[in-house]
Image (tube, rainbow, N blue to C red; front, side, top):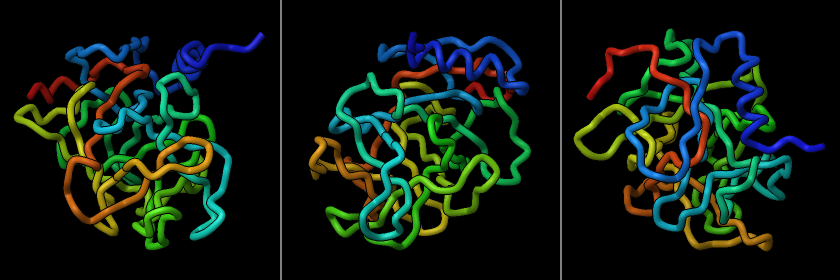
Length: 215
């Protein structure tokens, strides 16, 4: 009998030795839910509603690293990402995350990190976004600066955000350029516009342990 993706997430979090309390789920409905380190989320491209996605398929050009795409529906287990602090940070699981913080996103299934570098993306010739490394192998190419839109600066579910690559300055971006399997290209671009806005949608969210951030 196969396990549902949601049950697998609960099992993953409950077996995590760093977990402080039981997680709760949040559906696509709007809720005032803060996103904390250790939460497992799907990032939805605001304009097209595709989810940030990866699986064990390398790019056929560029770096040859694990590909990252936009997936058309919210029911795929390969679209879950674990929110982690930057390398060397003192932040801990359950801490809330405020705008302008550098984070990493770890692909839950393959344990690799959302990554970028100066290779060209396959369809548009923008900057390639890939998955790189493993649990204990991560570098500054995995660092993304979280930029929260609006007046409330603590990252919340359904809140509009941008992710800017710390090393190269590009924004995480997607658009209506499709691979043969019906998935969108995900890439990095230097211009700030509506095609690089994302929201946290489905996921398993850990409760806030650090109560300092209430904005």
